[in-house]
Image (cartoon, rainbow, N blue to C red; front, side, top):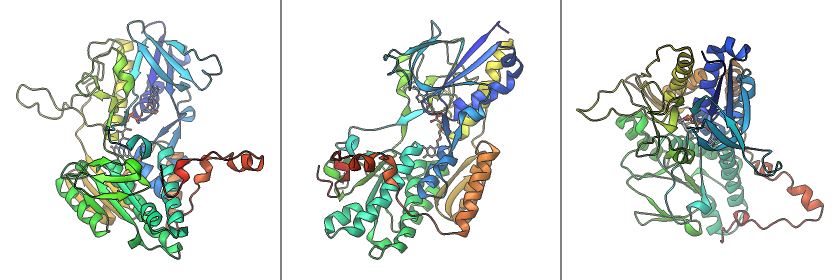
Length: 462
Ligand SMILES: Cc1cc2nc3c(=O)[nH]c(=O)nc-3n(C[C@H](O)[C@H](O)[C@H](O)COP(=O)(O)OP(=O)(O)OC[C@H]3O[C@@H](n4cnc5c(N)ncnc54)[C@H](O)[C@@H]3O)c2cc1C
């Protein structure tokens, strides 16, 4: 082992957190002796358990419990809350900004390292659809999930209080674009929550709401297979959700969703979950990328041809060695999902330790186990180890699986307690959108005029 190994982990998500966790276990003695040092750079001081975001949006889990505090879990690592802006891997340096950078004069900090783990994940894949940047809502972070929950409940309050039928119709129309995990689960959970909430409104019924799922291909939830995807379409339609396959969003300018089949829906809610693309940071690193912009990796999770650089998760193109290579062509790649990310992180952590000790590296090999998805309370769909499940059993499996995967016993206990309490008592149905503007009331009391926000205009007349 070298005299001192400085390991820089970029990202504190699935791969970042689990790799650092593995490293602090494998290199425990070295870290104690000062021979190894693990620094994790992440814009947030927590890891987000993304598969629970739809349940957080529905109010079944509180936002604090879908995130894992990095400082507590990674107590032998250094946590830097900041963003890596650029990398010069030849010189083994990274530049990063932190929350203090502006106050310090704006110059990014330079950090030197010996081993680099690149795990910045992915960002929403957007298209140049008119109005999307102005009105679209993403669903990748806990802030977005809770913001969307508050927004949906607020639209119900607007619809309940307006006398204008056009305002009411737009407020009660919810359009989701993209039929993968994120879109289908978010729609399923939020529709279920909103349907429940209508019980407490004197002038709203579930039939007054219009929920639309727009998917460009002919199927949804490809993760659970064709049969279960078809079942999901039938199930959502049975719930009066308007599922439009082979349809694209052409525009959402002026808050009117115009679809490729000619239909148009005035709406104040357009959720964009039409896939992800690798983080843009990767493009400027000079490291080898595949056609989609992911880091080209070996099955040992090293960046191909870049010694001392490692990657995994959504940012990495990792060959799936369990899949047969088609003829002479390249092997298929591991799908960008949590199932691979968490397992790759363990191998990645081990391989860095092996490499520092001059030991042979392990190969990443994992047979896809299948997928589970929740479609609302007591409703789900699953395809695991060849077994197909629907309805309550699938929903139960979804919860059991993700509870077992959620990091830390502390988080597991809190989420389980919330589920038990949720089963005993009624659901929470208040919108706390004002939490996003905590100073508003004081500013008003102090005489400052509130700024006019077009998003607050119920007519959406922009
Ligand atoms: C709503 C939703 C539901 C999902 N459900 C499932 C599911 O049920 N099953 C499943 O298998 N998968 C699911 N996924 C996918 C899964 O969450 C991802 O595949 C997984 O998170 C990828 O892990 P990662 O570490 O590569 O990226 P992430 O977990 O996204 O982590 C990336 C981290 O890098 C940080 N970062 C970004 N830029 C920088 C920078 N410049 N400097 C430093 N840090 C940076 C980010 O803030 C983040 O912390 C879901 C995803 C979403 C959005």
